[in-house]
Length: 191
Ligand SMILES: *[C@@H]1O[C@H](CO)[C@@H](O)[C@H](O)[C@H]1NC(C)=O
Ligand SMILES: *[C@@H]1O[C@H](CO)[C@@H](O)[C@H](O)[C@H]1NC(C)=O
Image (cartoon, rainbow, N blue to C red; front, side, top):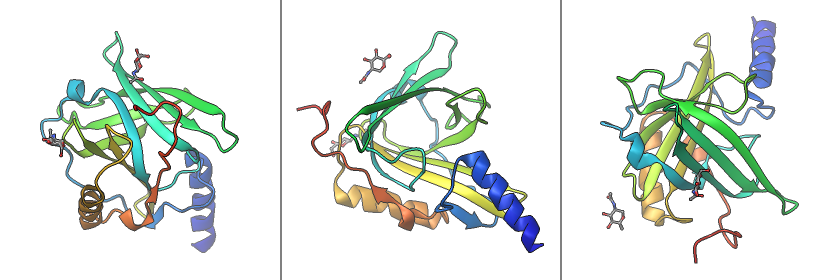
């Protein structure tokens, strides 16, 4: 049993590009409520990353995303960050709404060989903040989860952030693992 678990965990690590297992949790994914009456059009545009459960594929600073509607009705996702060496790293993906009856449960894909990852908007007021959750479970035994607090501006009032994290915690999401994204002295911050 243990070796099976280790093998699954190794496969899962490969699958998710996750080597450190920081986001590996026991049990199946929690099923938090998502934003009611989610309005994709109001959600489009630029979002700054304020905090996240760390991923190995985003380690830089000044991380932001820009969502635009494509002609095919899907959403173009452009994520950018400043790497440690100062260079700009930009990655483009596409988001879709797999089930129109659950518009806040998006899926995002950054390359054809990657599986679609969940992108659930748990809570947003469209103008200030957004809370995004992504979780994949493996045969109900364990799950990888990521969460992001995004904002329309490079910072949010600390009490807003702590309220959003408290609600994540109440859904059994590991908000205590979140780290702050450095948004200071970014080249393209609004003045
Ligand atoms: C977002 O991307 C679109 C399409 O590439 C671009 O026209 C727009 O200027 C970008 N917006 C921001 C805020 O970067
Ligand atoms: C966004 O935050 C501002 C400042 O706190 C507030 O006045 C505004 O009502 C908020 N927007 C929404 C949609 O709640």
